[in-house]
Amino acid sequence: MKTSSAVAALFWFTSMALGCSPQEQSPESPPEPPKALSAAALTKLAEADKADGKEDKLVEKCPACMLRMYGDAKHTSHLEGYTVHSCHVMCAEALEKDPEKLLARLP
Ligand SMILES: [Zn+2]
Image 1: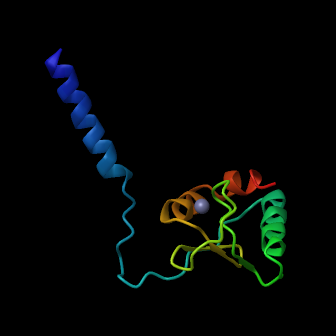
Image 2: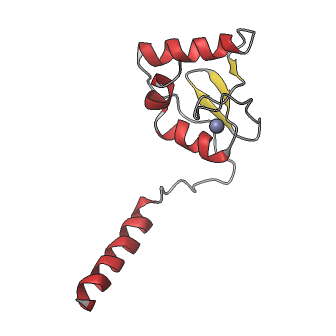
Image 3: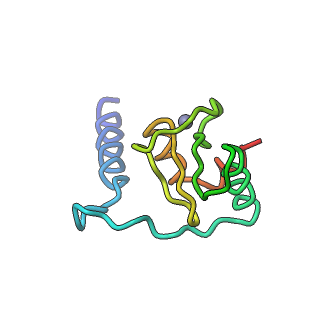
């Protein structure tokens, strides 16, 4: 069964290569294009904005994980006009990948 594992490895490698999004047009990438979020997700986003004490379209607490920690400006995402600080680069990536799901998990 050595051949099939080699094929599997090749398939894995190919899908990894294809999985990488080709977003290297310019080194200075423009801001993220606005993603259309559902009304429910927008409400969660507004609540997360208010949760840090002020309505300033800045979500300071990481919405991507359950730790409710203050995020870091190094890991900033832009969602529907909101600036979101995540606590870790992985939180920022997860939020950008599936904001709908992560916002729905917020209390
Ligand atoms: Zn986080």
